[in-house]
Image (cartoon, rainbow, N blue to C red):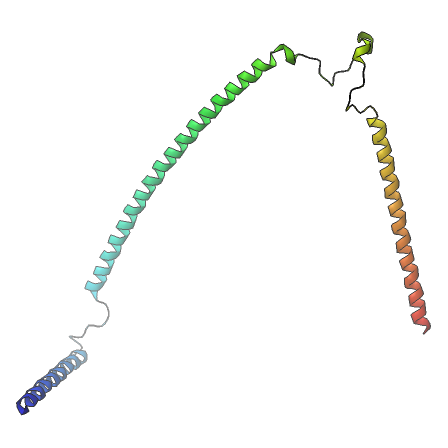
Length: 180
């Protein structure tokens, strides 16, 4: 057991001596101005520059791939939009053709409702009153406008009366306050 302790002490002593020697060598290197290098680590900086160049190259390749993908997608979308536009135009033409055919049908050639009717050329059965027809429209509209004007003027006079009453009350109150 004593032997083991002596060996461990010897080993520990050797480690301490080695540390002292490394420290003294380091101190000597720092104190010797001809061996000492202060400043840049050229090899390390060159390595960093090379790594940055590789990263930029990878990013550039990635961007090129992405741009190519986006270009292909844009071409695909434009092609689909063009095809959809052609289809829509065909449908529109078909609808117009059908509409023009329906307009040429004889049932659509009747006299329009807004055209004036010549009473002299009409028979008795042509001059009738239809349900839903409003023959008093113009008179009723004038009556409504007159009624609206009357209501507005009435409301204005009421408002003027209220404001004058408020002013009278304020003057009475101010006279009362001044009197005391």
